[in-house]
Structure formats: structure tokens, C-alpha cells
Image 1: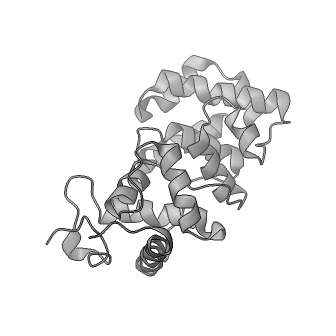
Image 2: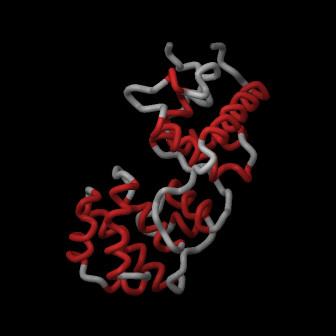
Length: 216
């Protein structure tokens, strides 16, 4: 397939989005949470870990330490034990406790609502900030680029970039701003259910006629 540019690329991207929206009408954030603080912590824990595993861990984590003040004061070794099964548990325990301490000391225990403030917090990079802004606050400041979004963006011919920030910047002008948060859910859902990293199910894909990477 010839590489698309400009308006043709935008039309291609939005047709992909339209079809995915039909295929996955219930696409949503799969990290269980009741408030922005819980979502931020869960997202930090989800690094190199499945959402399902995180959802098994967070009920006990938030039962013991339900808010920033409680988590900030918790014994580090106890946090490590609770989050151990998510992998890299020492670094993750350090990050979520550092996050809690800064929220408690500088933000009254509440997650700020701006990208700049969020990425200044321990453990929170642009991807996590986009998750929180889009799903906890309904603010479309960017597009979450995880491994699924990065992989599908390349497979769909949307960008040749490989760096997450550059992928995001390439995607932003292709889609309406008020759809950015939902777009990530659609692509993640498709990546999990159909467009597998090793064995994509092209024969079952609603995008087979659009995707330049599709195989018979």
C-alpha cells in the first residue's frame, strides 16, 4: 500500500477509528479505580504488568492505605509485599509512595489536573498523565501510547516513529481532540483481542482491507 500523507492519511486514520468504535463499543479503561488517586497508582503499577494482575493487587493496597496520606506513611516493606506480584515491586513501591508523599505535602492529597504538574510527580510520565487526565478528569490533553498503541500505529501505517512521545505527536493531528482518550482504549482493545504482537488474527480483523500490514 502506498504511504499516505496529509488529508488521505487523516481519512485513513479516522476510518480505522470508526470501525474500531463499532467493533469495540464498550472499550474503556480496564484498570479498576474509584478516584483519580487510585487510577494514578494503578497505572504506575501496570508498567510491564497486565491490568488483570494490577486489579488483583489494588483492592488490598487501597484497603490498607485508601488515600495519599495513608500510603505516604505506610512502611515501605509492607507496600512492597502487597505489590510484589506486579513485578519490579521495589521500584514500584518507591514510586507510588513518593507519589503519595508529594500529593500529601504539596497538593492536599489530590491529583493535579495539568500535564506539567502531573509529570512532576514521582512515577508519573506523560503516558500515565494522559491516562489520569483522560479517564479521571475527562481532559483530552494527549493520547496514551502504550505497547499496543505503538505497535498498531506502525502496523496501520499511521507513523514510522518508534519513540512514544513522537508517536503521540504524529497521532494527535489525525484524530478529533475529544476522541483522544477513547482512541487509546479502542487500539488497546484491538491489540489485545485481535492484533496480537506475534500472531495477529488478520482473518478476523475489521481492518483487513485497510491495514498495510495485513496478511492473508
